Image (cartoon, rainbow, N blue to C red; front, side):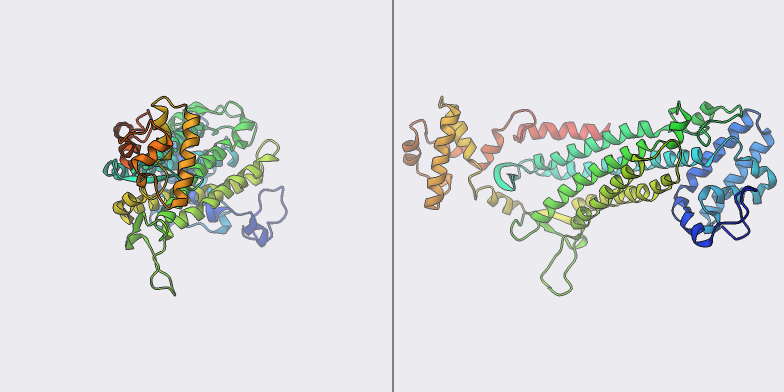
Length: 461
């Protein structure tokens, strides 16, 4: 604020310049300007609708606010720190455009319910954009999965080779994570879409406002039933940050796998030049920067969630200036999630290629078919725990001899147990190991094909 400005006749002097800068939020809450203008237009229409101001005054206010919108789009309206925040900046410019009638806009409204309304309008819009990006991400996962139903990849537990699975099945696991994210955002959106407009500073207003009228104009589903809660609630922001954090968890898990798969030790994927970088000193390097950045940015969103929880945990009712700190973390989380989804979608679509020959070799290099040997015996009447112990013994002796199970001769199998016949070799081949797991939700090719059809229908409807 300039040295001439004071809040009201209650104050004898203006803020110290350093405190004014410290207090100002215009540097970041300008992000809300479109939503502030939209909310203010609805408020002006309501004031005229209820007779608090005249119809002509309402029309002037709405037109003036629209002029500010156009000025902002054209780069002509760029308020600085003197404006303190976007709400004051808009009101000041409105008064310059329409004269003293502009001073009537804030009738029956506080910045407390105003900023709450703006933030909800912003987040409602951003949630829909993120849901759209999730659908695109899911679509790319399905595009790849549909090409790799019968491509096998080692499955891991404890980062140790466990059982081979269909690559499509592996990718569908991330599809399901993203589906939960999509649904979770829908749940959050329902609680975002409640209007606090008309709650005033904390206690409502003496003016005969119509809160349902403004809620309808702004496409809110409902209004807050308690004015204290309306201006001080940030549960919706915390819920969004929780949902955003889980989106980043899922992206980070996939990013970690891509990083491992692209290493020389795995060699499951090749990174294309369009989505990789080199080393400043080692000319042979191709670095997985995209997944590494996604993995790193995940911590930012986690941090914003923790910060928001800390802000809220000790706040007495109702509004407190601490709540100004909700916006930067919220805005940054939205931008981080959107950028990370876009980057991972591009990486999957055009930045990596699965090395199918290497994957085919990888599933033959280990003992991940051991469970199928135990299942083979169990299907022939041998108690599973007995079969389990027998297979553990043969794995131990095979490792000592430098062999894999596929290398054992039939007589060696039959020495282990007479139930073994020549069909053991087919039973433990990687493709049969995968195909046999035909339980619902399993990695068997029939189940995976059904899952792909269901998944495609899910995102197309």
